[in-house]
Amino acid sequence: MISIEANISKAQLRIIIGRNIRNKRLEQHMSVDELSSMLDITPGYLGLIERGRRGVTAYNFHRLSVIFEIGINEFFFVPIGIVPTNEKPDERQQLRKKIQSFTKYMTISQLEFIADMIKGLKNIH
Image (tube, rainbow, N blue to C red):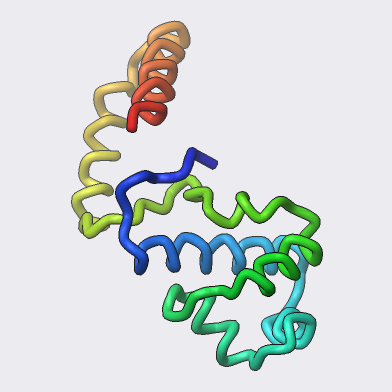
């Protein structure tokens, strides 16, 4: 997971939170029905939350953190592979392929250097 994005919209934040809730639910092998029952909300409403269409109340954030045994702040982290922007997936895929072609014949030390550079870029916000 990477750090909290500073310049995101409410809609993007709801998507991040919803995906984190869904990921935690699936990690715990819970169904939508099970989790919605624990939160005292309908399965349909939980689906809206997980898709980023509805927000989560402070009370339910607390309940979710207890259920999943995590800190509330973990719901706000951007999971790797999720970019809350309007970028087109095809463009991202093309760039990934281009990077792979550049790194195909690099040595381990060169790849480690590139990995360190990427880590540094992720920390710049």
